[in-house]
Length: 110
Image (cartoon, rainbow, N blue to C red; front, side, top):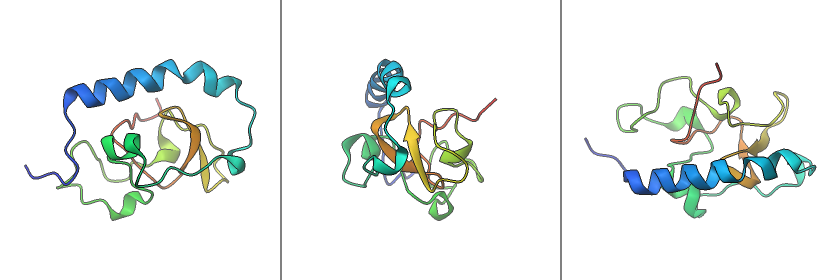
């Protein structure tokens, strides 16, 4: 399998620990999502988790864990409103992700 953005288990688990530790801080945050900086391709966490701002551009055959139709707005970690183009995410504290984006931390809402 050839992945353009390989991540090892240690990096992934470290990212998840950091994200889960920051959940209480995100809930206390009262900043409007429009005021948060957007996650960019140069963000180390975004690179480690393979974040892309447009999930439609992902090739499911080349991206491990991606399922067609998955995107930030349907993720349990996404805290934005359905009408917003960007919203806060528990994985990227203090930053906003595209509602049409995707990363390896994706967890379908149940």
